[in-house]
Length: 229
Image (tube, rainbow, N blue to C red; front, top):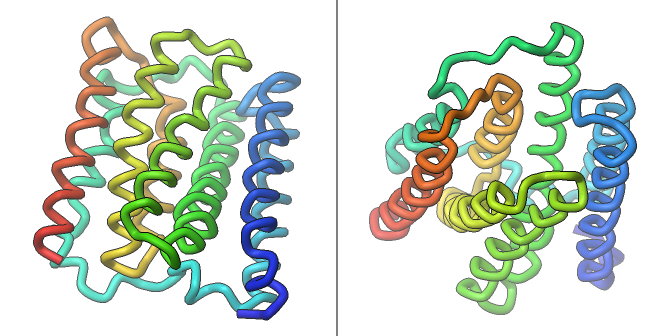
């Protein structure tokens, strides 16, 4: 880790969050998520951050490591359950193949970026002072950050539910990173949940059952990981 990064860590962390939120908010206001400009913007952000990470030698610091013993984490099976939520009602194929591909690409990169920013830079910076505060703040920041969807035309109720389960998932992801010393399970899960949302076709039951499931399961799984590891 370079001395430059150590001296400017807070500034860099805030800058990354601001750039990410503003760029994607503008993309969603001007274009659709599954659009070429949105994909390009997120690919460029990913490339810049990856180059920065390599140049500053932050791989180890950001927990970009392999999980040593997945058995200790139930082989991350609960994460598969979380990923499955978007497919509960079958597969929605109303979009064209091009739109589906662009949507999936955008969401994969968005998942990667959000994990690197929130469970990478922000969490690791705050862990230096207080673990409990770091977990709480990063979870709440990640969840409340979804309020920006209101500016992009999302319904109030669906956004509130999304904020609630995002906080829960954020809590789980923070625990996974701290205990396993790897951010990859979070990146893969987040990216898959995002990508598969293109196929989601909710009804009145799963509209509320899905968020409830995504709130309860992460908390139970996080408690298990904390006690067993």
